[in-house]
Length: 362
Image (cartoon, rainbow, N blue to C red):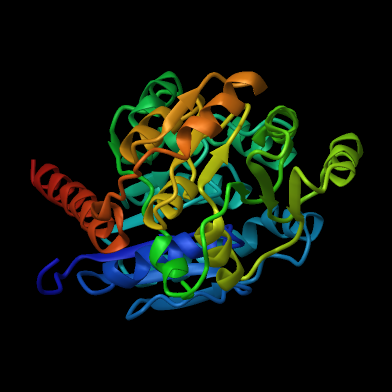
């Protein structure tokens, strides 16, 4: 991105667990090479952020404890004054835009004329998740006070417009693939195996995948890998058919994930609802074709890796696509690795700073 500029950015995240923490680390490292980057994160964040300066704050060890702390305006004010002390040119709120602290920070940023940028990861909250639903209900206040809003796909710009957002930027989700590719192992052979990878949630369509697996009847085995609660009815079907399903219902290390992608011949995302996912890029980097349902940003994401899109909720079409998908040659868009994605964020920051400087003198 060239030599370091004099732009100072306060990058603030209220959630850092799982993939969110990986995203923050992957983006902050290259950004910190080009700007003066201050990362404000909860104390349990353990990621690496290169040359960025990290500032920790306490949230809570459970949802309940975190909620109580997020309701404390004095703590919000203390963190805000710390952020302001670094005189940032922009503040980038990376998540938690509907949290009580974020609502206060949005008000203070507007009042103090500090440009606030917001990333919205889930323009349409996932069904069945109370915290996401609450965040979605409250975030409009923050979004209306933001100078600009970031979404990951063009399809979500209309949703943001309906919330009153006027200035938006579309920057795709970056690739986590390098994190897993470093664990590739020699001698791992491809198998007739369809891989479902990620945290197990109701909206991810495990019920449809199991029905499709039963239709395939072992011609292509279904591997289900990731933590989360599986409904008992679905779990019984999986356990009753060990020749059809392979279950890894737990958190997997990066090394274990890499081996699964090396074994797989196709990757499946049978979601009922979605925003975007990092999984298609990981699969494509391992040379694994992708089959997904036509929900959220998947039509954009899957086209990018030369995958197959099917209607949601149809196990017959999903089973057919899994068989067809094995013969596809995936495309891995290296331009979506974070060294390149960071350039788009840098351009976003620079554009906002330049706009504000011009209008400050008018």
